Every structure is written in structure tokens, then in C-alpha cells.
Length: 355
Image: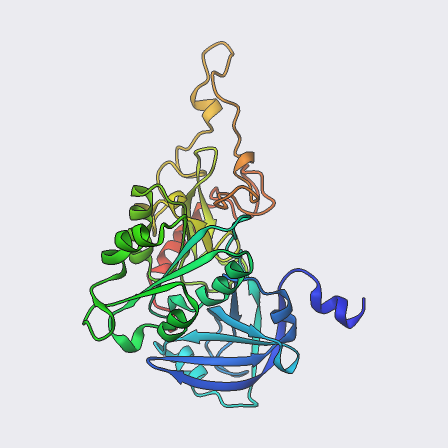
């Protein structure tokens, strides 16, 4: 395989990339790294997992960050945005040009884009709006119209407001303290923007409570919504089970899926928002769970069921209801039959592992 073929091959890569710039963007930090292999494979909505602390650190877990931008400079660069909230992100903010970082990517499933030109509304909360700008560029390539609705607690925490105003057909900004744009939260303005923009589809990224409210309002208007969830990810490759979420498949069965490999992008209406952080009693593999065919079985034969075994909940169906390459049967790695792992994962999610 030639070098050029290797660069364009599918799948994530692990690289040691040189830091090009570290800059402050209002309340956040942005790091640009030379990583041609990741830049060549990137699609909007994907993320990178970055090792922090250096070779002798006790911080073993990587930190996951949505990719904000890729550029062809220096063979290919990747930029991600973050807030300093713990030891790991503080260490990242202290990096300087020519430092070297170990990162893996691009990871996760990207935003799906429409086949035909439609009106798209991009909703972002805080620096959760970072992955939306690469998506906006891809949508414009498809001749879609793009409107932005961004919000945060204060003006310095709204990421990309100027870019949104410069590149979007319209840009509505909200802040809780009223320091920028309209006073309030993004969902206060969502209905008005939907009407004015004649929105056909919504893409959203930000805190989970915001995504939940955006999904509820989108359903009220019968508008499809794609959400990029923000979950703690300890490994980023589907091994640790820290980031599992309850998602309803197209067959109506709830499965605990890994947001790092089966997401982070999901159809909003497929997520069971009330049960995030738990294993629902009726989820596949939960105690007492039975397949539909068994629940409907009649004495003496005749199962009375619909024959669905979850296969039509596989990836490739919109909403990513099932893990990749797994037919929804017990005994496959990562399936909810391994309840011990999921209980540990739920406990891990509630702990702050020092971001």
C-alpha cells in the first residue's frame, strides 16, 4: 500500500501529532495539531481521543473532543475546542507549539446529510457548537440552506457566534444573562426560528438537557432531529462501556448502545431521555427481558410473535439503534446481556474522572 493509499484508507488511526497552535477563544481553548491521517478520514460529527499528562502520568484515560475543523495546511491539520475543567484539560491548555500529542481518530459515526437540498437548522450549546461548522460546510456543498441557533450562559461562552453570522443564512444567539443576543436559552427561540427558516431538519450538539428539550420541540413540529450527544468516554473505542445510552431500534426494542462507536450522532426521538444513566427494565438483556416471540408464545406451539430478532435495528438504518456487526443476540461482545459491565458503566458515568 502506498503512502497516499494509506492516508485515504477508512477507519481511525493513532498518531503522534505536532501541536501547531494553542489559542484562547473567549472562555475556551482551541488546539490545532498536524495529523494528516485523521484529517483525510474526517467527517463532520466525529471526534478524537487525546492522551493527556505525558508518558509518566497517572491520568490513564484519554479525553474525547469533537473535531471543530480540518485544513490542508502542513499536509492536514485537526482542530478541537475544549473548556478547562480538570487536570487533563488543564494540562492540554498548557501545551505549546511543537509539543507532541498522542491522539486517535476520527472516531464515532458522523452526521448524516440530506440527499436533496433542504432547510437545515444547526443548534449548539456552549462549545458544543464546535462540530456544527464543519457540518455547515458539508451541507452547503449539498446546496442546503443553513441557519444557526447558538446559546450559552454568557456571551464569552457562545462558541462561533461571528462565524455563524458570517456564514449562515441567519444566526440567532441567546444567552442566559443577556450579554449577547436574546436573553434566554436556545429552546426559547427554537419555535420562532423554525417558523421563520421553514426548517426541514435539525442538527444539535450541546449539553444533554438541551438536546432533550430540542428533541421534544422538534417532535412537536414533526421535524427530524439528529443529536450529537455529550457523554463521558473513557476509551472512545467501545471497550469500557462507560458511555452507554438506551436507544430504541426500528424494531421497537431498546438496546444499550455505546455512544462512542454507535454514536455520538443519533436520531433524537430514538433516545430514551428519561432513562439516560440507567438500564431500563425492558432493555435488551435486562433482568427478566424476553424476546417478543417468547413473550407471545402460545401453549402447545405457535409463537404468536412477529419474528423480529432485532436484525432490522442494525446500523445502516437511520438512528443507529444497534451496535455495529452485532445481530442483537446474547453472547456478542458489548451486548446488554453483560449486566455487570453496564452497572459498572453507570456508576462510572456518575463519577468525574478528572476531565
